[in-house]
Image (cartoon, rainbow over all chains, first blue to last red):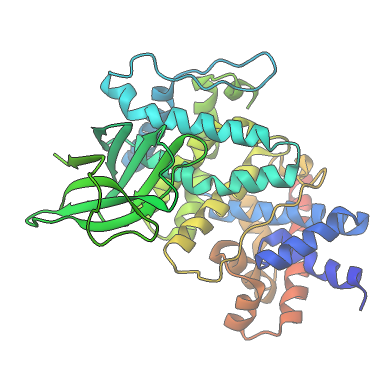
Length: 250
Length: 170
């Protein structure tokens, strides 16, 4: 069987999104250079995209749950305010004017991270596939941002940022974090209620965008404090340097 | 969406009103968790607001459905329920979304069109889309040979498109 014959058999699988990544990449690369496969993909992708509507909730989906969800989304959107559009079409995401205001402080990282993501996307926008890949990679970060700005999230100021608890999860949201020395990483620490010593949590390096958002693996329940220090790569069992901060969650 | 790009909150609200049942429905069906589905719905619409330029052309509903599915797959993987590690790959093909087909699409039309497919075609398609699994896993779960899975998915998608077009024409 020719490569084309093999590939066109897989076009429907690609359109439905059920191919493993490596295979999907190979089929996609072939499709971009093959008019027949491209046409097949376009036709079947339309059908595949429609399948999501099978799950569309009935028009009767109203009531308290629908209203609460809409309120939650609209609150986050309204709170983010308007951002000016630059003459070239690229958006400039404005930072809030009053960093000290509680509402603005809560949203600061959403603005900054959104701006950083946008700059990265624009910078890599010359290649459509690369851009799409970059945006896909931002999915987790976007979900974390939604978490951070969600109503009910709690924000605790620390140097260079905040510790945020939301939906049972704990985040570090930091801006302008300096690169650690060679062979070192940042390590978070958590203190459980009733304990006298901190326990090691996740290690990480600053995000090149300038805005670092880290979700700690520990659930927020029973957490009394979060700390951050610089440690050797691989992490430590106990802090070996003076913590950058120790933040009680109260 | 042009007005959303200009930071028009009312325009965004109109988009939300038009598509929240689609986004939330997909999230609920894939995640089977009310709170997680709400989180995902908020994340999708926040993406619409913060990076509206990621939607370039075609049908907004189809794009939102794809974004929601991809986000749900991410969430499923993060739960380690789907350790296969497959990633959705998007092929930029001109005209991939057919506005004529999508102009009048809604849940009722799609459910009616899917109902016209025989179960042996409908089931692997639904399993692949909402279950977020690979064709190999579909073959394993349905005890069908890989080649049969390919054929049935391809035939089923073609029939689905025809049924949708017939529905729009009618």
